[in-house]
Length: 118
Image (cartoon, rainbow, N blue to C red; front, side, top):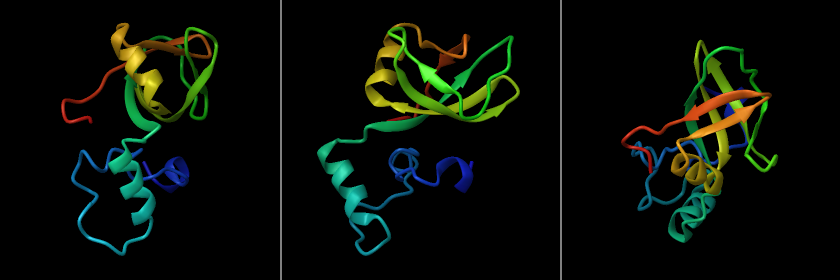
């Protein structure tokens, strides 16, 4: 994924911290103050998370809807029957606690996270 999907995303939203792609000891890099603030306050509000689906297609840019009908994120990439969404952490935790199934445009998305995910 690249600039078109993640142009306005912070490094921690893209899980760079879990992949050792961000230093919290080295200073003077672009976005260092915001990145450090998010990390040390534990205030990463959104993250990129993988999902799987079957049946109908899922469109890039489609809103991700929770069971209350609220938009909690959006689909940023799709390849065959898998994709990535950027969604609120609170929503991701709730989805994982309830079997990880959410929806976009009537298609069920099975949210799962890798073992290294923060």
